[in-house]
Amino acid sequence: MKILIVNAGSSSLKYQLIDMDGEKMIAKGLVERIGTGKPGHQKQSVGGKVIDIDGVMIDDHVQATQMMLKALQDPEKGAIRSMVEIGAVGHRVLHGGTKFSASVVVNEKVKDAIRECIPLGPLHNPANLMGIEACEKVMPDTPQVAVFDTAFHQTMPPKAFMYGVPKKYYEQYGVRKYGFHGTSHRYVSKRVCEFLGISPLGQRIIICHLGNGSSLSAVVDGKCVDTSMGLTPLDGLLMGTRCGTVDPAVVQFIANNENMTVDEVLSMMNKQSGLLGISGLSNDMRDVDAAADKYHGDAMLARDMLVYGIKKYIGSYAAAMGGVDMIVFTAGIGENNGPLRERIMSDMEWLGAKIDHARNMECVDGHATECVISTDDSKVKVLVIPTNEEIMIARDTLELVSK
Ligand code: ADP
Image 1 (cartoon, rainbow, N blue to C red):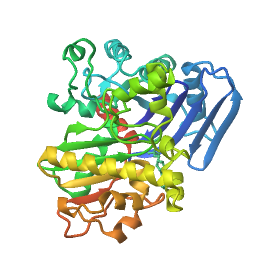
Image 2: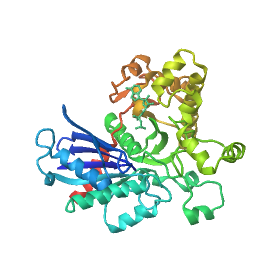
Image 3: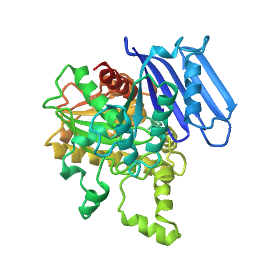
Image 4: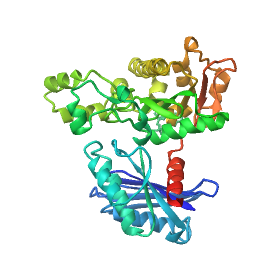
């Protein structure tokens, strides 16, 4: 069966077509600048065949979905002859609140529940819904599945997910830690055990998903027990443009001094902070690294803050789990940035983790493969496992529609 994976943002639609016979990606595409009033753009690659369309006004997600299906069925550069070849569609949905701890087949009730989670994911959930409804409209006979970024973290115990504010805010509005990147944390924590040929039962794993957005999770017996992102993806580590954890009073302090609203401060914390805000150069770790290697003071500070933050999380999760058996790196930075992995894992012998320099440096700059990067005598295994959220979404979709 061929499964279409859709990731709808407020003004974009990213997609992949995966042939589940061998789990091969056969098409990958993007429609962007939807409904912005500016000319849109579409790009699709099928093997070496590329469709690149510029300058068409794209009014809404229904039109974007039609463009996606037209490109997929293009007689010369497409991947399928007819839409009926698409057996099901798997949608990435940001926020499932406490309503979803696993993926589900979409029906009216599911859409209502995604809608009810809009206050928790105000930017993404409306776009995810638009993607679902556009696909329903254009392919009414094809089953749709929703896969939630928050679902994997629903196994966290209350002591990990509650905030120390009056409990009525949790009861009234669902104010608590939810966590994100769940599909990646689930894929990597499962895959690392398959790769080593062991059962997840009895394993205490720390997953370091380090990309433009970054989060760590602590996984015991294959289940998430803690994660670094919170009610929103702003919490936790220093990221590309997000500040991560700060004293909440900082919001009021900056708002008062700069005459800014709370919304404006949070926007600054989401979009102008992190590596970008500290280095003053870039949100991309490659740029920060290049400058730091030339002794640019603020780039060195940004890198030191990132490394120090990750070290502290690893230490705290090891303490929370009563030890750690594996530390796994994934996503853009985690998979490609060997020197940064080495900085994070330096002086971690006390924890029983020792990196093998040569093994670690084989896995860099676009050469990420599944590999062990710790020494043979390291008590804690340290690994790189490239993430694959699309495959996870496709597998869930296949499983649910085959029932
Ligand atoms: P997103 O969270 O947007 O999915 P990614 O997982 O692609 O982001 O991660 C982006 C980060 O990964 C950037 O900071 C970039 O420096 C780093 N990165 C991506 N590819 C490489 C590479 N080939 N070599 C080194 N760093 C990389």
